[in-house]
Image 1 (spheres, rainbow, N blue to C red):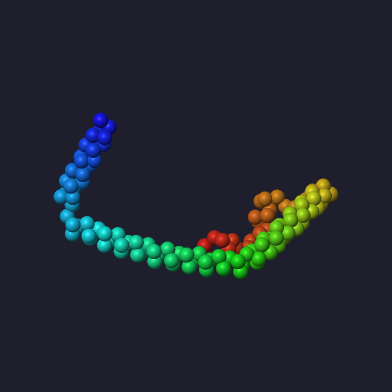
Image 2 (tube, rainbow, N blue to C red):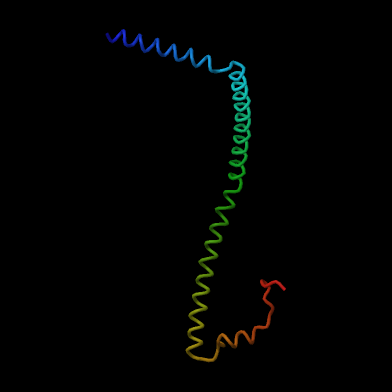
Length: 123
């Protein structure tokens, strides 16, 4: 009984396949295949270009990565130095203000003293 069921399913599949074949135009199918091959060719060309670009980028990065790491270390060192300098300046300012309270002008006096043009403002 199982064999007859399988045979019936197989026959039904074949009949459905034949019906689908009558619905599809062979010229349209060839046109779709041709377009697929054209797209495949373009994708392969694009893939080759991207692979070449990736290799080039990898070589360029290998050339400059040493400079990047060296400059990064330099910038970190400069940042630490500047932090130390500003910390010292703040502590000196606190000591000066404690000794001479009028040493640094307040905000209104700063604006009156600073008459330089603001270079960031368009004129």
